[in-house]
Amino acid sequence: MLQRFRLIAFSEGASFIILLFVAMPLKYLAGLPLAVRLVGMLHGVLFIAFVLALIWVSIERTWPLRRALLAFVSSIVPFGTFVFDRSLRREIAGVARQDRVSRLGAQ
Image 1 (spheres, rainbow, N blue to C red):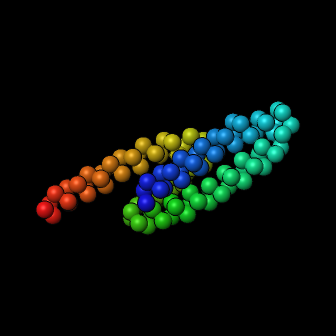
Image 2 (cartoon, one colour):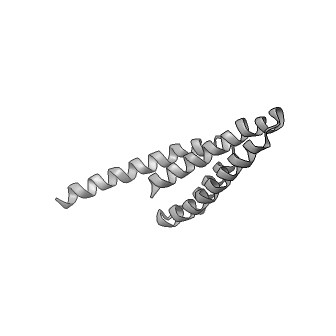
Image 3 (cartoon, rainbow, N blue to C red):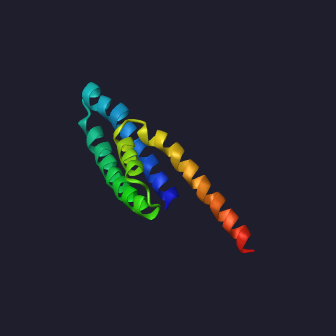
């Protein structure tokens, strides 16, 4: 589930960056409000998916409330999900190490 959450977080973060730095300038500088409408809708769907996945992962991984709140705040700050991704990669690597150790111990 962490890998899926990571993919959703990356997609949500990328859509936010595109909304802020591509669609918004197209709306206000080039007079193309459709860009914000389309990218904004996509970002909204991805943000809802991010929040639902965050709740799921927080429960599944028994994250402390502080970690879950940090993940949520990272989705509101531009480039925040990319920064938070570093801790997700470390956690995924730790889970993989634990799996290898437990498989070796079971033999």
